[in-house]
Length: 161
Image (cartoon, rainbow, N blue to C red; front, top):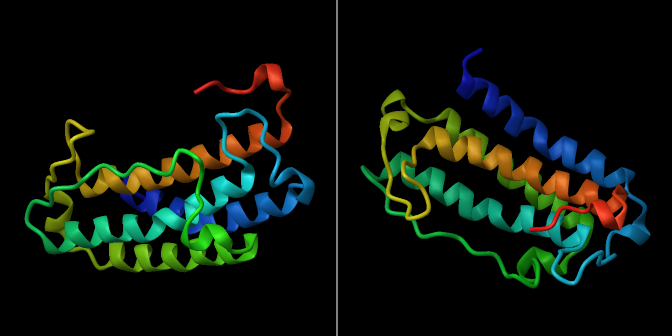
């Protein structure tokens, strides 16, 4: 299995990992605001669901455009509060799963030359489809790590951003 195949396997697992992980968290912890500047667990889950269409669009642009020019994405600093963010946890988890399946289907349709494309992204020195795929998986796990901290870590050990 090459690196790209391993990353895609990780992307396939993320919806299940997220859903099972969130299922372990007591409901009364979902809305707890541990710090003034930190999102709640619910906001992290909703954010993960809400960014999937944007990530799908980036993947599509890599497939369809010779050299995409991307704009940085900046989430609402107050938390994921639009679209699916107003729905239930189950709706957010389902939205995440559905969009992830679409992403994986699109990635599987990439021709080899797609992986050689370079895009412009002002935040990164280089931006390729492989970097984006790795970024998507890292983003999933970063938010899951933050949720685990919000659930389990004592206040004095919470990560400060």
